[in-house]
Image (cartoon, rainbow, N blue to C red; front, side, top):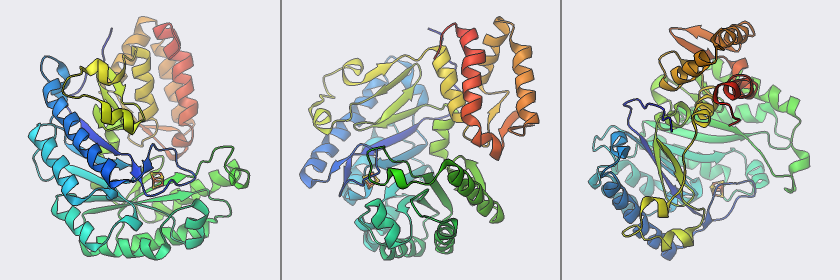
Length: 406
Ligand code: SF4
């Protein structure tokens, strides 16, 4: 199998904490209702999974990617973990040499406002966590009620105040757009409120609901959503913020999520915990979405292929994954990217390079791409057209190059 050559960048580690106080009606992430006894057992097994990885390095290339320089606690609701549980996880990762000991590496921790108080946040700060991602979703009680969230607007504001007081270097807010009846004025008020309270990074996702959801038929039309999306982009341009990914905005370049950039640029990552996905070339692998199964896994005896569901992506699949990521981000793709060069080599072999160059020129003329310093940057219109461009890469160029659909 042809394996894409990997750059020397360190991997990222994602830890999935699969517990929530209650399931929000719109949520697709894997989680169970919280239970302190189950959670403690989960931590014990997670520590064994971490230990497994310290041994998994023997005799294979995985060690090339570690120690990692970013760590992300996601879920579920990581802020249901007790501080001593978080401390044990951090220590285990460092003891196993999975995570750099350097105090300045990016550690992001997701919190839900209704699960924390000032002392809890102060503990996170003491543990060396400096990037907090707050699941606010919106700043009004009416909106939170509509989404079936447990917290209140008052709690959201209070938590932002505490984070500001504790001087976390980066506070990121998750907000949703596209709720039924939501106007851009309301959303703009939410942005202004969180900006005034020191938020320096925002992930603003479009609300998506399954057809069976009671609010599905009241969602805004695609035209209304596109209009709102453009207004969001304008708002952040006026603030001089960077719209660096389809749904992500940062006050300055150093606040861009280094961890998430690894997913979008094809850098390896290791996911720990049930439902977490990993990409350590040549493998993509994951654990079942099932806590009971996770707790039964014998990380001390079973082998890698017995524990994880693995896939060996084909060259075509690896290239599609690469474009899937880089067409979402303003950085776009660069002449010096390994995967981009592999793609171009394939095109040369089948004599399609001239056709690809013509395609790129067309996208530049359309205003979707901008060529600068060896990179094809994706413009705002380009981000809106990323699906169209991806389909063209897959159908017009990659099928010919690999002889199969990815
Ligand atoms: S708290 Fe977050 S992860 Fe948990 S159910 Fe709600 S949206 Fe999903």
